[in-house]
Length: 114
Image (cartoon, rainbow, N blue to C red):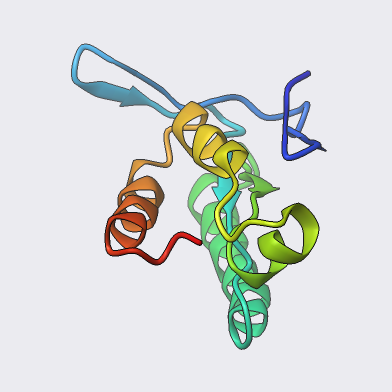
């Protein structure tokens, strides 16, 4: 089992695959998330319930997201001494969270990575 920043990847999840211009979404996709700082924590707690309910309703229990916390911001700095650990970027790349990666890379390019 692999891990990032010392946190194991959910064993009962599978990576999203991409080949020949198409994504293959498994029944239990691993989706990394960043809880956020400040109100981000409260927003995440509410949002994840909505996301899970939407998947449940759409797939009637056949599919379930395996959420995987990765670290950025103040929480990462407190734990790892950096606001955006390299392992966070690697976990996002490995689990095909391309949109999240683009946001983090744009912030890093703008000098927000400390």
